[in-house]
Image 1: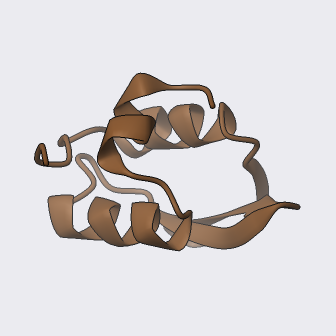
Image 2 (image 1 turned 60 degrees about the vertical axis):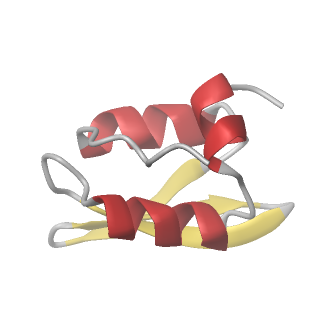
Length: 73
């Protein structure tokens, strides 16, 4: 299993958008994304998003690193 990438939060949000996530709200430096078919996820507005944090985001979104790096379902 590959390591999660060190990406800017905007790129993480863009890729999650390909899986149907849309911005629901933002409070401070945390952005909440929602998807009608999956659980909501919270993205910290950090550059870069830490690997462990991204791993948790992907787990919450029920995505593997391979699917995430590959793009659309």
